[in-house]
Image 1 (cartoon, rainbow, N blue to C red):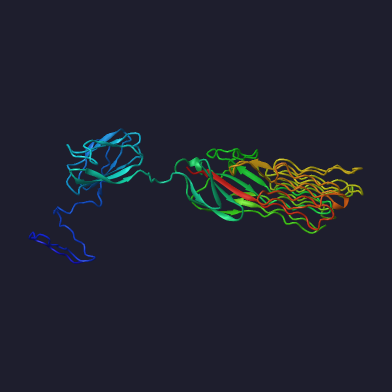
Image 2 (cartoon, helix red, strand yellow):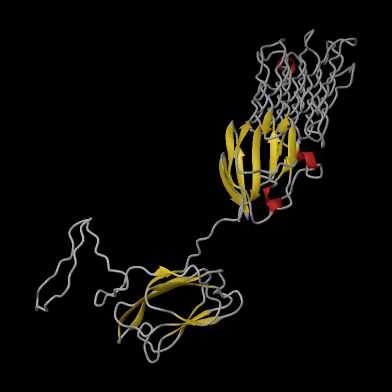
Length: 455
């Protein structure tokens, strides 16, 4: 880097003196001073001297003013053209305890010979002395308060907000990434969550209803909303305290429907961190040896059969957790020429219904067990309902939470020909089919929702 030394310069009207060239720095020797250039660019911030009481500013300096202990004054220096002074709210308390800016003598601030107050939280200002007419002019004023975020910061899934809470919804596999844990309050790192597994598939040939997917939820005290009756916060093992890392999310698929008289499929599990919800149990079909319901989050129901081979109910809450993630399925009725019907699948909060054995006349089949309703997403929705049972005359209804699928009646005896799969991302069990349906209904896929305080 080149260096130019100038000892003396003759004053020449209209002349221009250029120091250095492109890319060349011009510096002053130690102890030297400059005049005439002004200083309208930046200040030297006095980080080693935080101001807590009245003081007089110096040209070319910036100050951090701490008014948390009370209001005080910054006296501006006697200004000459090009002088510059800056100040910033050190503790974000200007709105409570103002900082007064006072000019020197009769000099002015913005054309007025009077003091002014800084009263906005987090405010920072820069003054430049222009001339005696306007005095000190504020050339930069930040009224926004840019601070570090003391709350939990995370990303992943579909992100929405509800009040002071952020909600991450995963309808398929994904990653919940925590960029920073809360430093505001350690308890805020205990997140609320709901983990719902996929529901089982319904049975065929007067088949049974399948079990809803396992349902697990905790509501952290820092995230107010109306939780389901299965809120497991009281059990410490259910709580997840997140740290800055990535968490793999698994969302279980519903059990796929299978052809008539073949074994049905159970649902698939969903996971978040240490929490796993089991897939809903498969439903029994009206065909030996597939009449028994399967175990799972909620149990699948048994199908109809001869008096000695009625399908047995699947067991819910398998494997066991507390609170229970689901209930048992129902049992099927006796098979006879006039009426055939399987049981209904278990739901998150209510067990599946059983069909009375040996009816002498047509009657209703069993509705699916009720699921669980929670507001964790910001609105009340039901999850993990059991599938209704299929029968010769009338299919059983869907669960009361609307997330199971109604059983299908046998169309040969005047039943409805309509059949559909359980709703996606609600964890409902598939309904049982009548004898004329070529494929059993599929269970609904699961879902994972995570909620925490973000502001």
